Length: 287
Image 1 (cartoon, rainbow, N blue to C red):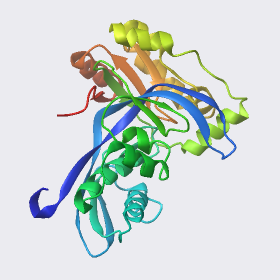
Image 2: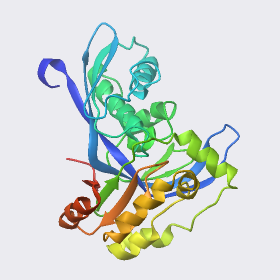
Image 3: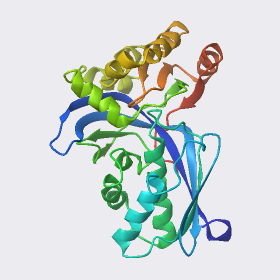
């Protein structure tokens, strides 16, 4: 533990290199297939013992974050405490740098980091398998973000397998508005469930380190339905490609758009040309 008995965990944003929506389930969720990468753009969680559950939010993107029961950090803390049969007593500080409702999984990343931090603080089973089980009840993206590493995801998000992906660099173009994930999936339903190509060629290109080929194969089934209602998404994609990105796609349920570049130098150039945010993927579990 750190100073004053506090524990800290990073909460990296996520990027889906492909996102296939396989269909709507009877429970209202959707089955998906996706490759998810954690990014260096990250929030942070710090927790210490307290007599009650208290959440404080600071940081550049703190203004739009709920502080009460609708915050996934609070829900994750309560879920872990319930699983352990204890009271949810902790003071949690969330440093918010990931834009809200941007398709980057910030809330889910915060919840996953909260599970890791509080498992350490409270002396609970902090194994990835156990935390994924608890996290699945908090949010569909939480299980994929319990471990800070690339993963393949199935089911509604609860089926998680490690993936090997080389380091990649990205430029993110955010928007001044958000898109709720529920809306994006509902729009996909309304448009008849358009489904993209088999991801096999994209995975082969990534394994081969062929970024130009991989960039051309990036795909997100939710992008069309969201872009049809928010033209800014397609405009951002075009801006990134015109400025030299190897490929571009909408992040998650949007509206952020990510452009793939060859290295950090090109990322800085592309960000300067487009006003974007430079980030890179975390390609393996940190030591």
